[in-house]
Length: 250
Ligand SMILES: Nc1ncnc2c1ncn2[C@@H]1O[C@H](COP(=O)(O)OP(=O)(O)OP(=O)(O)O)[C@@H](O)[C@H]1O
Ligand SMILES: [Mg+2]
Image (cartoon, rainbow, N blue to C red):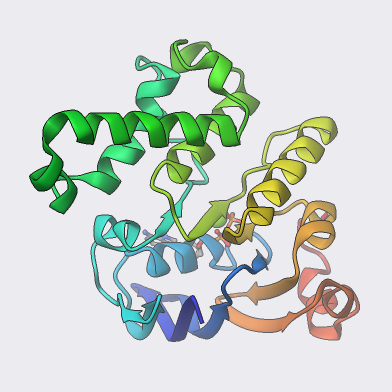
């Protein structure tokens, strides 16, 4: 199993944002994570990627216990993510925004020691171009990020995560704020990435997107896992339908 989390729990004061949640992502899988606003989706991502410490439970990635490991360590093992609120540097070029991702990956490791700085720079550059190409932004590489449209910035975030050459890509509401055409293009992009062998975990409110591209869907409500199964089963699951009644579910 590529990613496995067991009994994950996170309390914020008196609120249990994630309550004893277990699950997994198989190698090559495209897993959807859905739930009403405040269900705990982003918190679950934060626990898995080390951005927020767990109150209880464990996270294993690629056979290693990464519970409590800082985000950059988790990322170097091959788990990278985007954020619900875009974290772009507007006054840097598109290319440099992406290089930040690749730099985090290559760091001051063995590669630099053996090959020296030139080789390191070459690898960062190569990985950054590959990531930009993968999302179709290479023609904008020298633009300032501030000049990009909202939709293009979303791709830039994905490119930055890809520059770390992850095995598992975690996307937090990549389609939020996009129109129908843009959402369909994004869906095609995610499927293309998945088709290259990348495993993906996707939080998304757009149900059409989730139902059409995910192989399996995990459903959270009030911090608890209430369902886990293929889209066809989730669509008519009684607990899922009930938890979404009267919420902002599409
Ligand atoms: N750092 C924090 N401190 C206190 N409470 C928090 C913190 N982070 C999240 N929460 C609370 O935990 C609960 C789950 O929040 P979370 O952001 O994980 O939900 P979500 O499913 O991602 O929602 P959305 O669909 O709106 O993005 C919410 O009640 C939220 O207010
Ligand atoms: Mg969220």
